[in-house]
Image 1 (tube, one colour):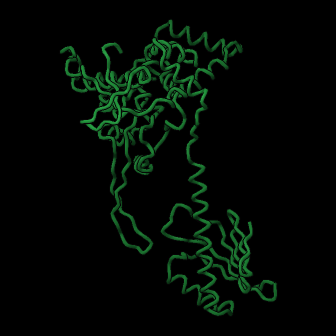
Image 2 (spheres, helix red, strand yellow):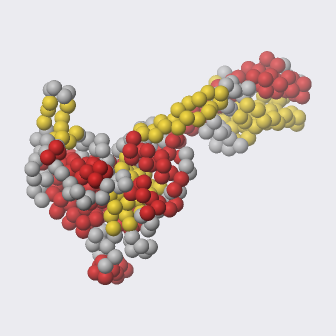
Image 3 (cartoon, rainbow, N blue to C red):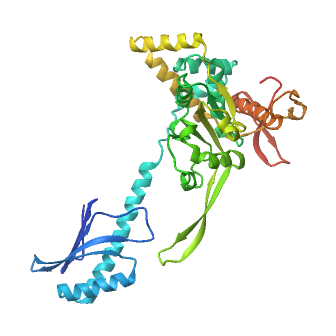
Length: 404
């Protein structure tokens, strides 16, 4: 793309940026760095123009255009080497700096726009279909059947429980789960298949992540997201910040940062939750701290489940599966997630609920029990009348009925 202004030509390409005035032509070699906005480091090739032709003498220099000392040294070097006035070179470099700032800003904006997750807007028909499904009498049974039609084989209890846990990401107290089982029994397969029923814009899938990576998400980027960890063994470095997100619903890290003037400042990186976290492992005891915060789903390793899976694999290989039915089931379940609105759930019966004394770790189990009741009620929000409380300033909430 070329720009003409006051007789000057500017031509910008990804790896070869060029600016030309009446007396100078400058090439910026290697493009621009977009991740260090406190500096504007470039490698310049500067040529003096003479009657429309380039002089053979060329000056090349790496420089930070935000560093006044470096700029002044380059101005003097150009005056000496190219025999051109310092005021001409200085004004050209100033103009170049402004153009590069604008160019970098445009690239950064475009990059940010491209990184935005896809977010589907439901049509009126899709919205009505999803709400109609949520209003059916036997909602949980209907949901479980639809999960089966989407391609999740067997695991009748685990798949519905996992889907409800993933749904809870939209509440203020999300649930978490860990899938447990021996190697090769389908832990990751179950998690990934149920995760396909959650809209893409609502989940973050992790294979490998560095220890500090979580602190560099945007402040609200993870709010009400589902975080999927394929193998906990490969994500040990991020388990601590994940536990903090699960318990405290936010993480904060203090780092030292230098601004463009070289001044050292202390800044705080904060990432807000809440989040719902799901992971898979063969080693329950190693991840006890994470297990205490999660529902533990033990994968069905029976011969009957083996036969179901192998039969499914044969039908898939033979081309006898109704793939269109699976896609439609996935789409409906994703749309159901999109029409669920964040709203508070109040359980007036909570004070009367008790757990057996034999329950393992009763404090956390009691919390999970109450949160799961709220998650089911949240999922059934289109079957309940919204309540309002003037005294508590609640804009809207659902009360739990005796029958869930």
